[in-house]
Image 1: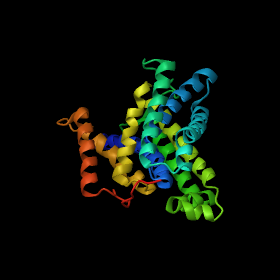
Image 2: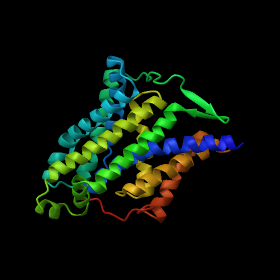
Image 3: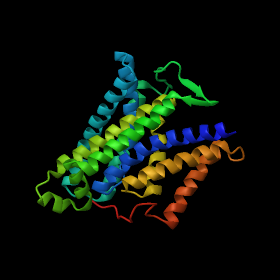
Length: 295
């Protein structure tokens, strides 16, 4: 019986780690531009397919595929920033236009995937043989362990960049006051581009892992809503809160699925109800502050 609980805990932590990389991608952009970047779902879908194409074309192993996919995610996010948000930011446009632009860009990217690859389901190859191993009666799936390890490593590297480097200091300063940061001689556009690049790399990592664990399909971005829910629960704009919210969401989802009386279908309903409760009782989330979206 204990092995069953340990197995569930591993699944929950692995799932929460992937949600954390998605949620932090949202939190990074919200931190500096004070709007929710819904085009992140499109970036995740495209990078998931890019990883699939890279592996099939170059026959790369897991590690090379993951690295190239993350880099492509960062580059794609730079394109999204330039096309969808750069002009709006320079013109100091209304935040509603950012919202419309991000939704439109996300839908555009997902529809491009539909046109290029069709609506059929495709799958990543099996990178590891055997794909699982047993220890003391507990089944460890290799990709789940890697999801947990690589997501935690990505988040740790991000924290080091944010709190131990000049780039991180500039990003944190920009999140507090853009005008003052600009007056201090910081290239605001360059810092925003760097933030989008990091966000896109995280999207590439999570996109590839979701592609490995689920079949690839153009609407894979619908799973990204879990990352957004995690960022809401943790507190929009809070990196630490996004991570906490993601792991709580992963644990909650696994627990609800394992409860026979609820099942996997109703578990999604419960998760959305939890988000509504948070928005009603504590709109700032677990670790966030109430922030008005503005540009």
